[in-house]
Image (cartoon, rainbow, N blue to C red):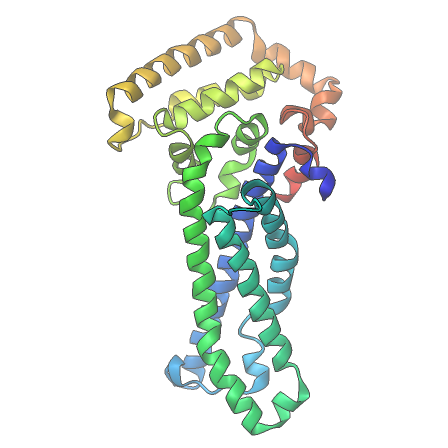
Length: 305
């Protein structure tokens, strides 16, 4: 993993990818927990607050193998990258603080599950009664706390995003994989993240920056796609994005994007460029890493998104 952390842009993309991916996986676990609790409540015709499950039933409430994998892989990576980016000997950013607590809360859930597997807890009714009272209170409390921590971390991340707005690896990777990465997390999808990253230019600026970056490296089809999406992006509706400076910026960006598209069309970029890529460019065939700016992150990490 250390090889993936070779540069600041790669680290920032890994941060975004592991944060949103782990958040989505956690929500699946949380929703499954809620579903199973409701199923037991219906089965035993008992309010969830008064459920008294036997050990084998209690052990099925949370998919602990999935939880352990989430903690040991994605959240562990997220914590490490977050520490490198946002922690110093003197201070830590609020985003990093939230990520650290997420890791420790997942660890606490894991330890409680290990306790449930101990024979003395299962076989001694008094021990089990004490343990059950504890987990009956702390399972939902910890899970909701983790959910709230992800939301808190997301609020802080939106403040940090503008500093990543010109990172080549970040902007290209978001263009290629952002929509899938944010599915189920942001109601407004990738456009909602664009609005946070580019407060004045919004999605139009995001696609313009990505298109410029692709074009500078010779990826004309990807550039054309980004520019076209920029022109098709809806206008922002919030007050900040409708000030005079924001409107002037978007007018300038729109003129630039239209000029780039016209130039690509005039040069026959779609027909000529696609045949070059399909007909033997090792850059495109073997090198999403080059597309993302020479980063092994894209070559090795794209499939994980």
